Image (cartoon, rainbow, N blue to C red; front, side, top):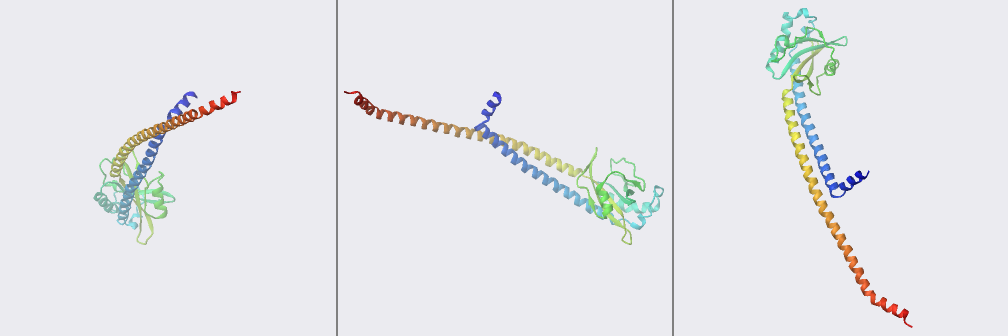
Amino acid sequence: MHILKRLIGRADGPLLHGILAGCVIMAISSLGLLFIWHSAREAQLDAVRTELKQLARVAATLLDGDRHRLLKSQAQAGSPEHLHLLAPLVKFHKATSGIIYVYTAILDGGRIYYILGTDYLYRVDGDSEVPDPIKAPHDTWDPTLRRALERHEVAVNEEPVKETVRSYMSAYAPFYDSQGGFVGVVGVDMWVRDFDARIAAIRRAGIGAVAAVAVLSVLTGFVVFRLSGAASRSRRAIESFKRGWRRQNSRRRCMRNAPKQRRSRKAIFSP
């Protein structure tokens, strides 16, 4: 308890003012930097989402919904019908950059199935995954894909999906048959390495800014500490001067009153 009181006593006055000033500057600056970083990240994500939606919409226009309905099993893999449906999607895939997979999915009995996949004919560098067979079930929880299939709308991931070797985002757009009936969705997976690089650059800049703010906060606290100390010393000097002045006034009054007091004592003791 005694040690705690000593520490509190040392933190009082100028030191406390300096610490508070530095902490306030650090807190306000950090909140501002956090807001800027979040805004920059959201702006980059919005740009990726917009691009993915456009790509998915374009890919959806390349599909023949009537022929797509005819693909029922893996036994049709490599058939003229299968290759005819894949051809425009593969051409589209090759013409884009950063796209990992282009594929289609349907909803049958509440279960999601993959039908087409451009990786059957074309793969990007580094992709060693075995292509999914026709009507392969997709039982992994994917709320974005399910929403696109159930609501028949364009959907895109809110955040990148992180894997061991890369991060990617997916967008889905519906396609229809010749009668306007909903068939399924086309999916586009994009490797967001450019996004990761931009976010890493923003993160490095943010770390540098936080370090600069920390130094500024320390300097601000030191300046406030020195100014508060100088002000405190000035106040003590003024109080000391006032006390000395009051003591001098008291002595002067005593000296002025001393002859009167002596005369009154003589009057009291004289016969």
